[in-house]
Image 1 (cartoon, rainbow, N blue to C red):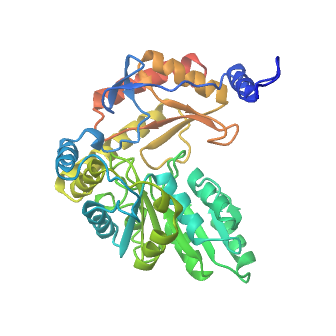
Image 2: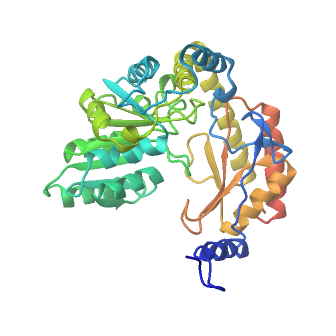
Length: 402
């Protein structure tokens, strides 16, 4: 049956919504990377200093990881051919999970297809409508979506506000159901670190399950990049640790670490695990090589270089007068407030040779739009010097710096 002549196309409203974004100067096209993810790379045919990648340690192009990927294709093929629970669990999948569990000092680990589904799938699997989730207001979208899928009641405390968190915990402590206290280890848009020791104290005081999303801390914080739990020496006090293989590890995927019972339960109930084909052998071997590198002197050197670049860049930004908010890590926002201005700042930076993405609502709160910059271990000092000069010039032209 055909639609009546002159009828409005059913998806026309999407075109109209896109037109609104264009009118507000918030519409963005995808930048296309030609070649490898490098500190100076080619996007849309233009060579730019790349301050938008999560490739903290430069492992996306590391020769040891490339060799491991190529070798795994020869021995295991290009794909697993099935979900983990049917025929898709290979020996290298189990070896990687055991390696990560040792690295994170936990009993066991399960690998997911992305960091997003590691968070969302775990929360959805182990909590239900009779439970309560207590969450920092700036936690990642995957945590928010996992809470929604679980149908548990969600209570949100003001960002890193321990008094407000305890107020909520006190309010719900005598209610039935399991209670989850959850936080990012490093917050992805502001670059600050969670007050994990105090949150663990509260979780223990009020009988909560403690969960940390360490996506932006893995490979960055703690000895050998083991994350916020190692950074604060909170081993044994965090029940569920989530990490990513897509940022400092240089590949793709996510993982959950914890007790053997937790991991076995996720094998049986985490929907992304049950209904997604397992990682290709090349990806799995790449991740194995990355964790081996982190545990070596070469990995230690990369982490030291990352932090040396971070400290240099932050110091210079603050000296220029940029508002870098609460940042304590390589994620350094340049907060400008107005979203249209942030996107204009980003576009003009790109034209002059710096790729630093503009971020606005709904990713961050209205009135807190920013340029989000991330330095890596593989940026050279001259790259950062040049980027700082461009940032200053464009910011003064736009009135962001006086």
